[in-house]
Length: 358
Image 1 (tube, helix red, strand yellow):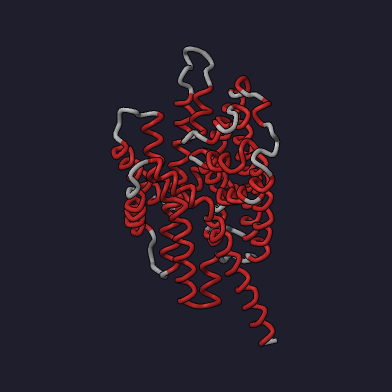
Image 2 (image 1 turned 120 degrees about the horizontal axis):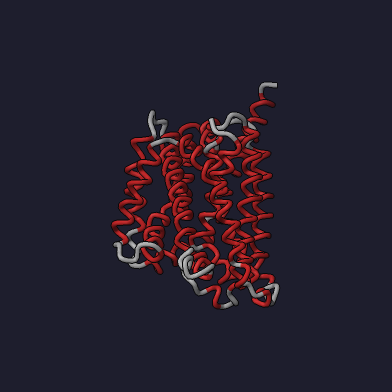
């Protein structure tokens, strides 16, 4: 069984991984240097949506189990495939983006294919260890990553320029509150938390960990947006492919520490590896539960092969980032809609069933 702290560690890491990869670039394209306001706004909306989910999921049943109770095998399979598709799309681009980033930042002379192969093998081995083991590693690693994150922000202080956040509303109110709503995709990993409900000791752990994850993960996102906006003026802030790397390059404590970004990238790489192994294990579990299979581990390798095949199709990293931008703009809709719709149907079904036999 997973504790609420382990669950919180999982989702917080997932949210921060999204911020580390490419998410800020899209938000700064929409909102300008007012992306931090959009970050606060989307965090508040995520709280509201999760409040609805807390009211709907009051037992140790996830969205697939509820679908099975309400509609039997057909609805269970349909819901399971929908969840699998959302999580796969949310996860698969990491397989292509991560090796490219590592090659660009740390291993310039190494082929991305070699890095990608090692990455995939690591994901398979990690996922094979099981969800509980991965969650324990998350709980150990997250405080270390938190300390590094705070140190990272402190090191940026000498590079900030307060005028870079002007005008306060960036590209306008519409850009912040309409286009910026796509920022909810960073909280799409709450669907992953829903799938893990049967692994919890009590459904209260779902409520605690979800609330804590939104608060801390959203807070980290806003801090990164503020730091990035303070260091780079718009529209320059919307042009970098890997925003977090541009922030790391600003840090130069002395001649001896002139490449300090390598340390940060090492921590970020571990964070992404943990994210990938967890996602792969959960995807295998979703497929197992959807089709009532006995074991999930044999599914790990086929799933990662399919995901890899999909994201080697784009010709370049820029193409991958283009498609990722489209995905991030709409992914939050099914990520929240599927568990909410099934939860409402489950509630109505049980009310009707209760009244029938009252």
